[in-house]
Image (tube, rainbow, N blue to C red):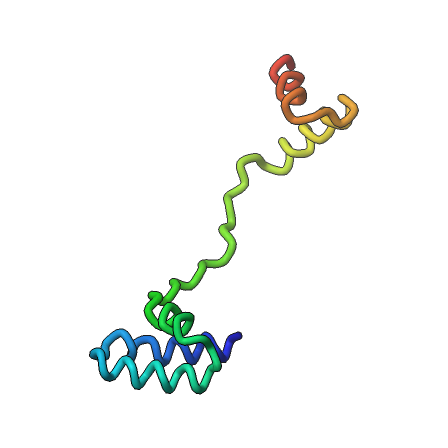
Length: 93
């Protein structure tokens, strides 16, 4: 799949810039090399290249370690209740 993507990337720019007769030649060559159906090849070559995905977003910590430790102790003392009920318990403190 990586090789196919590289080939599509290399040929797609040429295909988009070409005129009608040139597109036919490029498409014939591409179909022969990849073995794709003609219509699928047309769609693959016309599609704009996808932007690269950025890595996972690292979020800043909202609470410090001392607060998390205290909240964990309250949660354990309340027999590990759900977050909605834990919110009510903490609000009552």
